[in-house]
Amino acid sequence: MDVQLFNNGDNSPKPREEIKIEDVIISPYPDGMRVHVQVKVTPFMERPNLAMIIHNEDDNVVGELSIIETMHTNMEFTMHLRGVDNPAGAYSLTVELFYETRNPAQDKTIDGFVVADPTAEE
Image 1 (cartoon, rainbow, N blue to C red):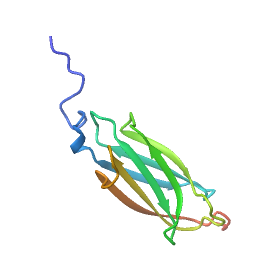
Image 2: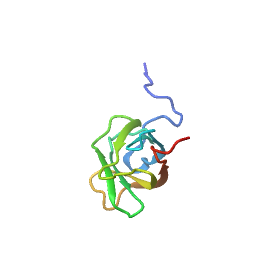
Image 3: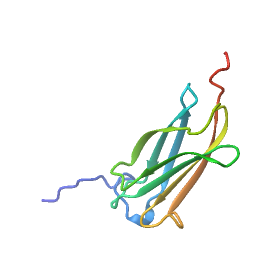
């Protein structure tokens, strides 16, 4: 008797070389000092690593996060903006997916986002 653990559709785990970042959603919190990030990757057989870096308009790193051998394909994180007095402004989030080395990363995405001035009245 064969027991099928996964359907044969798009949700079946893929080999390492087929793993990609499928979606990134960035939502700044109202306080402006934190950012909610959702990352979706291809279902995998071997657990990948992720590196997430937030840069400000001056290309300074203001937030970093490392995920080692994730077990999940859909992930949610809260990243903090560090070393910023007033967080209002434009930022970019780089997400890199890799296995043994980040140079080069297997997949990489860069998304921009804006943090509104938390002291501004509506």
